Length: 591
Image (cartoon, rainbow, N blue to C red; front, side, top):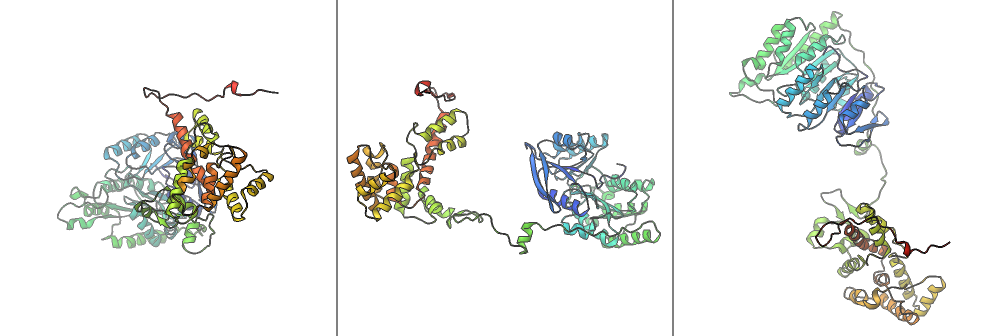
């Protein structure tokens, strides 16, 4: 690691579809004045491709999705940073695969809890192949005015307050991501701000060390001073001490190792990070602070004095002309997201959909104001649910029972009707259940199952006008409307319809009228009987009745599709029904 990890042209491959940190990276890009997005693509394991829409300032852009690391690296060869948001369970494999890509130079592992043995293998591979690992257990890093990893530095307001939208003169390194965010504020107050900040991660074996990054900072001309925030546990800080003693680090170093309070406890104490515990006297915060001070670093007496030590060092560099304070740069405004603006009452947005039947915003959905729990506890049935979702009110029990009876009666009328035939043919073509269902439903109309609403309207209108059966039937005939089409259902099985329904309805005025019409039509022909559609329509008279047939017949259509797909022989062996082909001898070929 000889110098800069990042620049204003750096692009990253983002692993795992975490769109919030991706959007934060894009917002950072915009306020820094980048012309290209820092996220080249997103990897969602198993994805077949596509895009995710995000914002680059005021402009909506599409970030491509890929299903594999190899594909993403091959298609975006300029992207040399891999940001790994995988869980600790899969972070090792995905990080190793990324390290093996020739175009990837830096890998940031965000996950905590990566097994130490796995981390050591990653570190060994990275060192032998001249690659850099940040983490595990890190938020990543940032180069002010150029590039940041994921959630580094927190919200946009904090980034601007810390002056991270333009480069400063300080190189900062720490183990803690949270404390890094705090220190960026400190540096903004005490100096002209950060040039680059890295959180190496709080695990016992970080992928790169404090000294690795301090040595890099020594080789970056824009960095004039180095600030280190260490912690008790481990020996990482001693690497910085040795580098300073060897003259490898000559820039001013201001350092503090936190955890001095550990000596107040009688037994060893774990301080947050896996590596933040003292395993011996030389790993204590006091010993490390003393060693750093002896090597030439500026070390305050306590953390409270850290900011002042940084300020004094910075002012000396400015006074001697070694550091020219960075000029302030105006920050371009980021448009507020619509959701945030609505939440703050800053804009009014019209809704695009109105729903009066169901509300799913609470702990459980409600149907026309009735909760799911209430429906279950009251032993409600399908008829009750239909009454709430279709008619927006609780219908009387006789009405909901009638709805359920209609569904049972109309669920299926055999494989030869057009809807069932279509579903069967589609199933034998190897299509899925939804396709089979839709192919059957598309046949429903005025000639098949879609005449219930018309029957209700015709009967009600005629009965209310007190038309005689003769006037009614002949009037329709003059209009070209054929009523009571030929059917077999209620002629021999009247109990399926009119007789049974009288058990539910307190009044059957319109059905009584329809039956007088049937008496008249039977005088014309024995097949002009009232069918199921007419019976249901004469009883219900509320509308939506064609929909009732659709719901009922969907049950049968699905049954026919499953029957074709799951057909078995006498030995319970699954039979493969071939593609349906209509027989030639059932076709009249004519010119």
